[in-house]
Length: 160
Image (cartoon, rainbow, N blue to C red):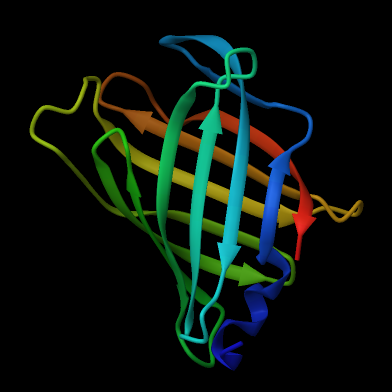
C-alpha cells in the first residue's frame, strides 16, 4: 500500500449492507436498498471504490457509483471523486480524522438531460463504528430542497 493512503486503510475491503440501507428525502417515498462497497488500492497514492446498490426484494440494480479517494500527502485533507449512473460527476473534499471521513461537495457536474430537481450539494460521512462496521451517511440539497439526510447504510466487512 502506498504510505500516503495509510490513514484511510480502515476503509479497505469488500463490504455488504447489514441491515439494508435506508433512504429518504422530502420528494421521495422512504425506501430500503442492499449495497455492496468495494474499496481497494493498487499501490498508487489513492483508493479505488465502487458502490453498487440493489433492490432488497428483486435484487435489480439501483444506484451505482465509482471513483477514487485521494489524500493530500502529509495532511489529513481528502478528495473524493465520483461518477454515478444518474449522470452526476462530483468532487467532494474534506478531512479524515482517525476512523472518520467527512467530505462535502466542491463541484458537481451533470449530463444535460439529468432528471430534475438537480442535486446542488452533497455531504458524506464515513466512519468505522465500535463493532468494526463501516457506516456511510449521505445528505444532499437540490434545486427544490435544503440540505437533508438522504441515505444511511451500515456495512459488514466480507473480505479484507
